[in-house]
Image (cartoon, rainbow over all chains, first blue to last red; front, side, top):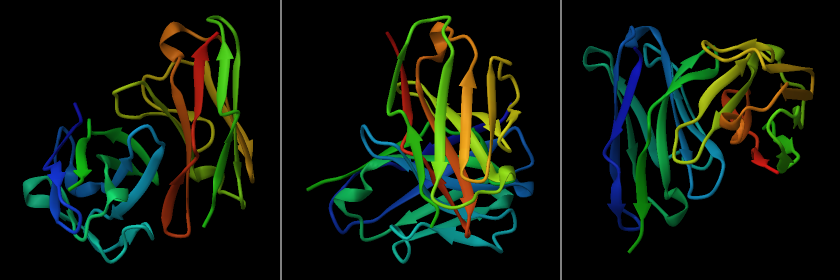
Length: 117
Length: 108
């Protein structure tokens, strides 16, 4: 069974940093691209970032480019999102998702990031 | 950047009725890269349809997708109680994914 479990969310002050993790199991992690998607409270889904299976290709949404860094460790079956210079607009539930041909076929349950002073 | 506009914003229907949800793109989308997701309160989204019309694993056949170019449709032939949820379309293009704003299907 495919499982994706996010961790690392929490309360952070504006301008602060946070690193999210996503632990994958139940599939060949090193064969799949992965994405981060976020959802602000009461709002819709917003794609954040993409990383290919080998980390050779990485994309970011304009809203996070230059502040967020996606990475993965295939030996540890783990995906990461380093978030810097956080602002109120980054408050959201962050989901990791498995990317299969540009659609997201499995999602984690999400981790909440709250940016507030 | 391709913007997806979903309509209606809210659909009020009764169980057993047919639901038709629309997703319009600001520019042409490859049919291979149009997907639909369902999200119930407090839960992660679930993939329903990919490649415009292919159902994901375990998705009942009352869900169907169609469309081409800039206009896509998700149809639920007969609403079951568990189908009342928010639905999102999603596309890939120009090195990014994007989602529509969602359609809420609520019980009338």
